[in-house]
Image (cartoon, rainbow, N blue to C red; front, top):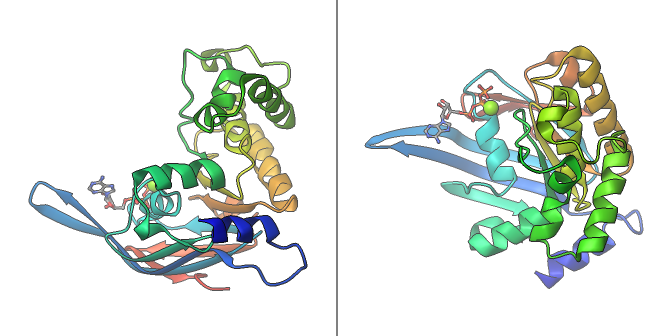
Length: 244
Ligand SMILES: Nc1ncnc2c1ncn2[C@@H]1O[C@H](COP(=O)(O)OP(=O)(O)OP(=O)(O)O)[C@@H](O)[C@H]1O
Ligand SMILES: [Mg+2]
């Protein structure tokens, strides 16, 4: 753990080649439903370096979300290896996985997954609550993140009082508030109109320009073209773009 934190702290400092943020080798994921098994990932090799902006494309059911859940330590591979910032994820228990998610990863989903009873800024501060950041600092950082996504005037609105595009920007603010190295976005513009799509994509471009590593899952070719590299997933396998 200490080694990985040192790596994170010193990453990119001297312009030296950093460890890849993400390194998957031979990753398989089998879902079991009753007695039925389904192999959603069938041996995925994928390497993503620090600071890259990668789009993942593929037809419905090809395994994109499964892959994202593994990348995000929300689920574990059935076999194969996953190294995240130098740490072997398979070796970690649930508490360590939760810790890694909190420290390193921000998530944005197609369904915004905001808590409807909380105001926007309260939603944004949540990752910091889990991270045990003191309350005044939480509020300051949540407000700053809301301002960053252009919603400094909507702090106290609940999600139901915001448009879809605004809700997704709140979700992006929540993903950012912990200053994660890695931002994982699964169809973040899937429920948005063209104007909101443009806003959210511009935000991702900005975050990438600031050095964040971004993995964006999308069905849309024009959205994918915003990334530096497109990884294509088909039938549980990476068919193109898996290595730089
Ligand atoms: N929890 C689960 N239990 C059983 N099968 C699952 C589970 N989650 C996904 N699958 C199956 O695994 C395959 C890959 O699903 P996944 O959600 O990764 O696809 P996807 O590429 O994200 O598709 P979409 O573009 O529709 O979101 C699908 O055939 C799906 O039915
Ligand atoms: Mg999906």
